Image (cartoon, rainbow, N blue to C red; front, side, top):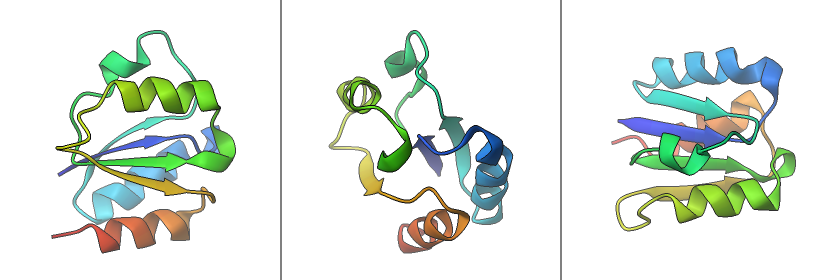
Length: 93
């Protein structure tokens, strides 16, 4: 299963990916706004938005680029490891 994480801290990217691997999720992590971000997202099974560390413009760009019928969207105010772990455990099959 695939997950896209938007937001969070730059120094935590590696840890986010390791947590996702531990829960058998393939992860893409975007902590900064990039050109063509909406096209890089793809069609993940789960989209996690860490809202405390991401701009409104970036959120709008990402949400416009996904199919909400196929992708579950989770908004979380904190961008901690425990928050990510809890989200992944709640959405595992």
